[in-house]
Image 1 (tube, rainbow, N blue to C red):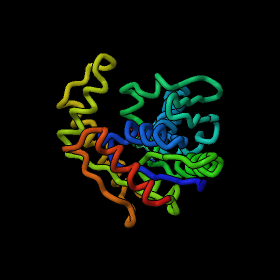
Image 2: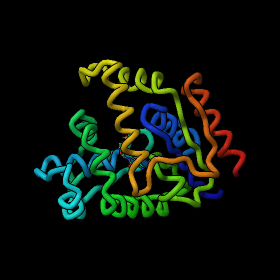
Image 3: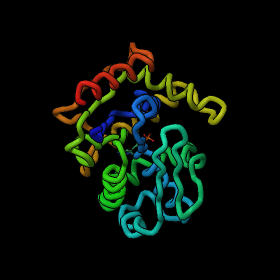
Image 4: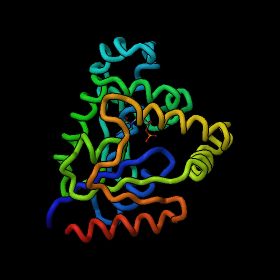
Length: 223
Ligand code: C5P
């Protein structure tokens, strides 16, 4: 049995997490949510009074928190200095600050290192989802997928996800999402981008099951 590395990139609201978890479960692979790592770093900065708008302060502090990610697709865990942060990293405060923190090159170097170690140590292989996995973190990944969807569809999915947790409506969600993507795509340090050899899948008109099927087929073709 060969060990496969699957990179799934794309902007928010394209179904990256749901797709990646389902593919990993189907194929008995590990799963890594790299957005959660940037969120954990951002949560720590906010909790420790670091000005997230100040790249020098962020760069100077970013090797202090110990971020540990579990790779079980059924119950992915993330801790900072031993504390479970899976809930607090999803608040609107963290979401609003995460793009600024993840644009800082020192933050990316540190988190990219964590990601490469986790991928190299995953027995049997892993599905890694993010923004720059196929281009920068794991350019030698065996299967690369780039998920897209129209801004309308993405905003509708995100606000359905947030329902009950946050008072965001579709219009506000769409605005926040477009803004975050613009920062993520426009930054100098490994921006959100499709790798030349990634397969692009527009999920606007597809169900989650169809997207999962499509990625599973790509992995099986690789085997
Ligand atoms: O996927 P999620 O919405 O949780 O990602 C949160 C943020 O983390 C993104 O908006 C982006 O700023 C950052 N991120 C990144 N590189 C990755 C994954 C996420 O810069 N590989």
